[in-house]
Length: 124
Image 1 (cartoon, one colour):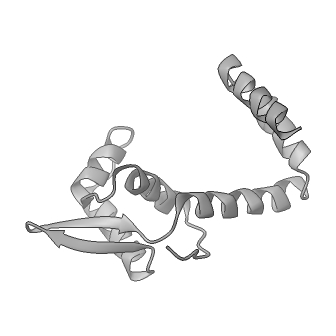
Image 2: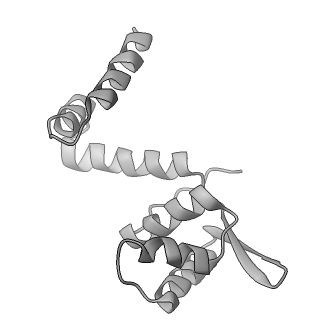
Image 3: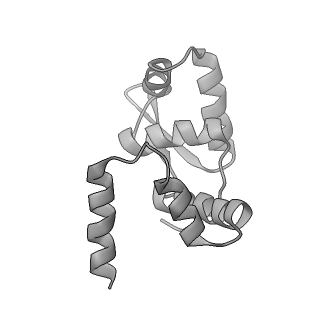
């Protein structure tokens, strides 16, 4: 799969995360996942998926009469591009500042901190 430069909107990223986890996936399944956490119309999700397909971010196949979607962009590439943008725009290119900010809140569990420590130990 070739690397495509693509920076999704927040709504598109929500859909892409579901597609990356379940692909191939139907609009109905994407809608059901999003509807678990917020009120959203089926046609809204359908329209967003159609736009992502028109942009070349999704591929559509028909299987037994059901339209199934897969991503043409890799999750790691999109996430890296988003991180690079945040790193440059919000933290002036300082990975240390970004990491300190991310770890400085109360949302990081002890297990996550241990995993980071283990990863850092392997880098040295």
